[in-house]
Length: 113
Length: 114
Image (cartoon, rainbow over all chains, first blue to last red):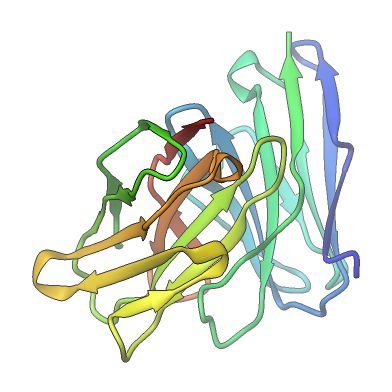
């Protein structure tokens, strides 16, 4: 079972470049999330989605955009990358009814020079 | 919104030592509590969870946690750690009780020395 898959796993960008991280889940989960993980900061929620065609802002949404055109995919976009966006990004999904249990992808390490 | 704090950011233990990692949460109605573990280079995975009932919950790999309502705490314990327990441990609570995910503590980096 693939679970939650993120691509790419690693990426190096120059300041001002744009890129998109793709998250795909095969568990038919309604809810999907994008977190960033920084040393000493834990995980912070960027954006989330409760279903196809819907998105909402999390704790640290500035500089990011998201789209959920298909239920199984959740895209995270950086329009103009900044060094402050150097981080490890994790996608997660969960079922409705909200037990709170999240299923995570393996992460995408992004470096912005 | 709920919040969670972890007291120990870095812990170093020898193999076979006992472990207790602290976690305190802010009150926010129904309490669901989680511990996640992240092994080096891997994604987060659920270690254990508390929803209701017995306040002592058991998780994978011999870990357990006790929910103490009066202290707003959910500390993680293991009687005898192994080198393979080296990882980062996160306590988490639902952010708002809806679909807006979990709020994580800042994590505890645990190093087990052989």
